[in-house]
Length: 391
Ligand SMILES: *Cc1c(COP(=O)(O)O)cnc(C)c1O
Image (tube, rainbow, N blue to C red; front, side, top):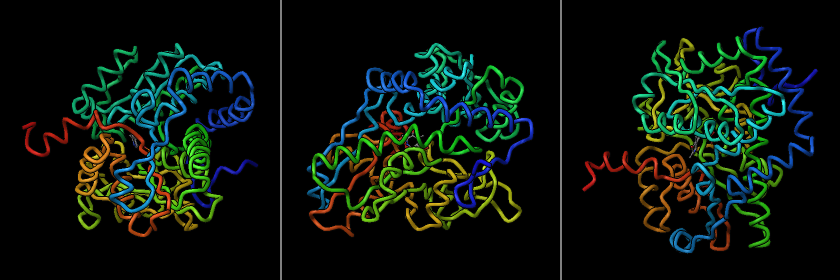
């Protein structure tokens, strides 16, 4: 029987009606990822369309300030402005090779919906994106972006009208239309086989980084830092290094207003094992097992659980997870902008903040790699508003 877990985590906590679809996806993925035609088409898309490989940038100013050798992996320069396209192009193409005629997705802040709309447009597959009504109002620009690229945004008016409800509606659609539809998950979460598929499509980040740093420095980094929402940019970076015990791996979670306040998104730092979106992993839940409201200044980190592979890596002690508060992330947002002329996504600013702490443990010759998961243009207006206007 197929192992559907990462240690005790993961699995397939879904209605019986979806088991067939997950089995088909597993079988198709194993076959198609070895198909040279798939490999060729995906590498064309990643290279000529999305702009891979992305640079690994040596940052002289950060290095001087942090007293070690600091590099940024520039996923902010990928088409769409973040790492998300590695996954949506990969899964979109997989769906096409499976003969699927339609992509569906759910989105909270809209970033994954936009990345799915991009993939659907270039692959010529119709896209429908489920989004809670509350989120469609908060994220009107992303709704418009999706529509510009030909996606249909389905407004969800059930429940709290946010991500949880959008997930339920997308699941319902998938059950009803599974023959022609692929459900394109946005992070290394959900039931088996999604977490492994998403990791594999994001693993290009770590593979490139390892090759680039060895070429440039002739040695591996002392530490690698990435932010963790669902965990896809982090697992994509970490997976190349988990077998190298000398490389410290650090995941930065959304500490929100502070762990003590309960207003955060740090499921690995402060959660406990529970089932969410079809998998067992660390989960922010109350004493009755109800999923908590999460909060982060970074919309992409505002997720109450985390991919099951991270849960396993946490328990094994291979990756250390730390909470970064909104305030620290906002500081780091300004810091990187001023120091290097690179405005990071607020999500990625969590990794920068965490790296500033990590640098204190390193020697001058040590290499520190930060995964810059996305660019900050999307966050500039919000940050300006938080500091009291554009003045
Ligand atoms: C969506 C997003 C994240 C969080 O998602 P992961 O699956 O944890 O990578 C982080 N950074 C950026 C820029 C994002 O858009």
